[in-house]
Image 1 (cartoon, rainbow, N blue to C red):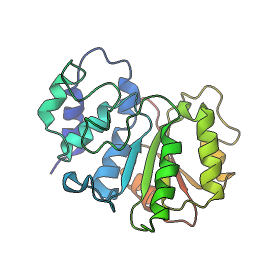
Image 2: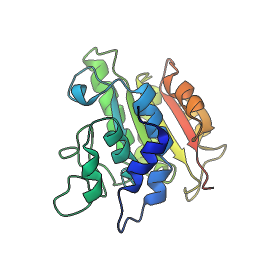
Image 3: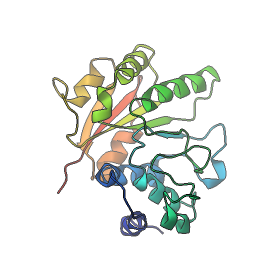
Image 4: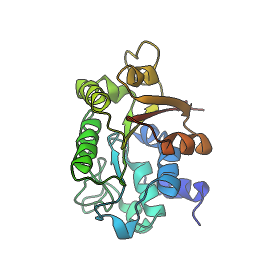
Length: 223
């Protein structure tokens, strides 16, 4: 059974000129809880219509995502050693065509949450009630206007199969009155703030069911 210690070892196999290592490290515990305890998806069900969907909007730091995919059997761990090399499928932004389990190509800030709202609405239109959609965004990314539109739309349409996870590592330029959770709550989301390293708190917040969309603000501060 993989442990978080093994996960850190997988993470460290990716070396080189990577400018977003801290952005990736801040997501490691969140991604582990999602793939180990929350998401209904496996290497055998990556194309199943009733799978849960995870969208990494914070795609400019994908090292933790790749490490978790390797730990869970979506990737051969050996692939990590050559990441970002010419013939590697693992780039500094994940490519949905090349990376098994990646739902979207991401890295340009502000795209993921809108795609997540559309995915959740598409599942609802197909009358698929089992799958859930989870989108991981960064706090700085929320400055993008497309996210404000996505937050408002999901709240207005009561998109209950959608969960946004916002990593709050204090990198946003301006912030929001009352904090990130308040930004979601005023638009009708159920919003919770938890310690982004507390696995049990993350699990409880991520698996909660509500009438409308769910937002989990995961606070991370560098030690």
